Image (cartoon, rainbow over all chains, first blue to last red; front, side, top):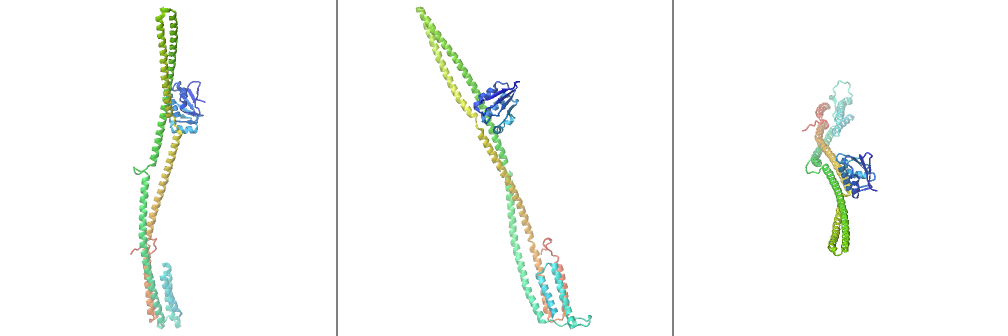
Length: 99
Length: 381
């Protein structure tokens, strides 16, 4: 299983479904998921399957945020407890919308 | 004979009451009663024994003298008892004075110790509440630590972000290198075609015979150029391969930079937070307990002060004992009277007894001014 991407029919929302493992090995796939999308649309990252986060995962999310642009909302959804702890330690609740 | 015994008994009762007296109001009541009874019996006795015919007849005339020897010995007995009791009273006065002095100095020392303790506790309180600059402020330390942790986390994430970004750039570079490979492939196929072309030209030159000899040389040169081109191509490819290898190394390094296990960091952070919480709780506990100790110290100082104040009982005791000594003087007087009575007529004796009683009453009224300790009006002398 790798990273999956779903785009809304109107093209204004992109959802990226993360794999169980989300680390440096996925940096290429993850960038490919949003690379060709325009900034300004809404990005969602679904973490329902995620089980392990290292610091490169945080770096990848920050790059997505950068790509989306300062004002765009980036939503992190279905966050498992242990991942949420990591995100909170990194103060991500200030940069992303947790849902 | 009987009434004489009653008089003596009354006197003895008076003596007993003076020495081992009940509380004053009682004692005085009973004493007056006994004295009155004694006087009454003393006066009535001659009348009763003489079988007086009328009440108007003065009693004194035919009063017989009491047995002189008996009265003298009672008087002497009273004197001697009086002296030993006076001695005891003096001893008690001395004992009380001595004890009170010792107690007073010891309690004064206790009071000083309590005050010193109080000062130390105050110092501790001031120190632990961060009153001085160099004291350990736990709250400040906790804030600093959590700020430090946050900063560390920020650095970690920003390093990761930059590393991943670098990885992306490397990916782009690898893509470019792959493009070079494509171009090199193109260059190689051109060289191959050139080689083939040169081969064809050589064949054509051979067929032309002597006329084509010059052309054959040209064709040969073209072939060798194509071979050199292929070799050049291969060298470029080898170099680019090396570059790709180097990029793989860079990629691995960037990977290591970007990927930090956060579990260790989070555990460390949680441990620090737990420790800080424990330290803060301990600090609070100490502050609370020291507060309690301080309060107890206050109570101790107050209690010692009360005790020192209570030591004034010495004055009251001394006054009471002086009153007792006065009582002994009175008894001595009574004893003298008894001894004197050995040769006197009873009428005069009764009058003197009456005078004595009135004087004693007066003396006691004066003494009543002195009450118990709680009233607080201690008459110091």
